[in-house]
Amino acid sequence: MNVKEGIILGLIQGLTEFLPVSSSGHLALFHDIFGLEEATQAFDIFLHMATLIAVFIYYWKDIWPLIKNPFQRTTALLVAGTIPTVIAALLFNDALGEIFVGAKNLGFNFLFTGLVLLYADTRRTGKKKIRNMSIFDALVVGTMQGIAIAPAISRSGMTISGCLSRNMDRKNAAKFSFLLSIPAILGAMVLTLKDIITGEVALGETFGVLPIVCGCITAAISGYLAIRFMVKIIENKKLKWFAFYVFALGLFLIGDQFIFHLIIPA
Image (tube, rainbow, N blue to C red; front, side):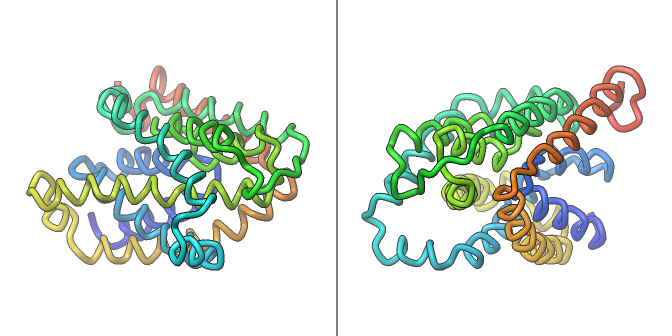
């Protein structure tokens, strides 16, 4: 990987992590386009870590009270929302890795994401805020996040849709979705760092330090801009445009997988 490719992947990660179009699906697609095969999961986790910086900056006023006083209701909601994701990852992560190799089979998941986004856009705006959520609400949203461990199913799209289905107002739906990304990404980071420390993944030798640094900086900056943009989009009920995009991308990838083979080999 060269610096240019690292920056492009960082930009893709930063934008698509918070826009409801699936960062994992786009990264897998561009891994195939760039011909990257080794240690890509580890590199992607570093990019996810960079986007966490964007979440901390944008929602610092909400995160700092949780750090000062972690034993509070919001923390319990985030823990409850994380549990289904952990269970899904432990049960299905390895199997999904075998099914979705590179861009193969991503098209169907993009279509699923589009359907969920269309549903979310039709929901009436609720009035429930994070402080009014029940543990059951958090578990529902967490289950939606667990579904998104499959590549090309958008984590933000699933969690925002889950929040709206529980009658949350759109601003709080976005906030809880992005706060819920923190434990999910930290958990994946810990597992990947373990593999790097034990030598199972030699990230620096595979990619080089400079592409990693440039990619992470780009991901952090673009991620922050994407959060600001996405909050306004959610409040204005315009998720359908992202649905149309993933529908088009999904149909193209299905056609490529079975007919054209421009990106996905036969």
